[in-house]
Length: 365
Image (cartoon, rainbow, N blue to C red; front, side):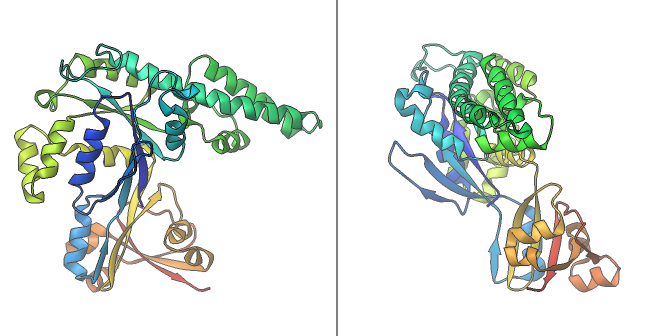
């Protein structure tokens, strides 16, 4: 699995329409519908032309691309952190995802009532963020109380943890998100990680616009970009209606349809690319006649860590990694030519995996 992404936002902003469209657009998507209280979950394969290239070379019996799990989280409302609209349950769903796609309504339509009566993206973003902050404050308050009790033992580390919790609580009280708190050391990174704070999750803003605005912008998108600029966040402009049309088309017709609208890629592809960027992920491959498999790992991962993504035994018993670059294999056409040209590299434990590496791990357990 590449990563899981929660689709969040106010009611009636297009979250479910977008979710249904992008999960249906994945040719090999699997949908798991739950009742209305639980989130809908859709698993979508990650489009990657390199998979097609490897299939042409190896003609494998099995193909396993990377996949993303999308979670459609029911619309949050004011008071969600206090349980309004089943808010506590919906906020717990957010706690379980790797990243959030915050869908913001950026279109006028008198037939679709806005929960607050008017279209105001800046206000809508602030409503969602306030509820997430309120919920995080509950978490930090609890941790602060626990840390205060431990600090009374006189041990320096417990005192430092208590002081950290106090500073973080003040940061949240000021209406600031946890992900913008400056961490000073590894202890603080561990403490904040273990709290699983909602506002510490990476976010991308998804502006849901009318079809005529999908290749450009409008006054509402400009508001979202203004907010995102202050947060150094990503902004995507999509049309849930267009994505629904794309989902109904045969795969081979989608590129032409998008091109006619002035688009290079679908909303699904944009979310995937930005999600990988947000979470600092990359793809490496294992390939052979039995199977071509795409694997997802964080940037900076060593060869043994990448081996561990496949199986813990691979990491424990790691000996070496035999590395080919996708570009070299695709250009030359087969492994033997890669070897003959001296482009098969033998790497040890310190090798940092690169995007597009084709890896054969040697291990002994």
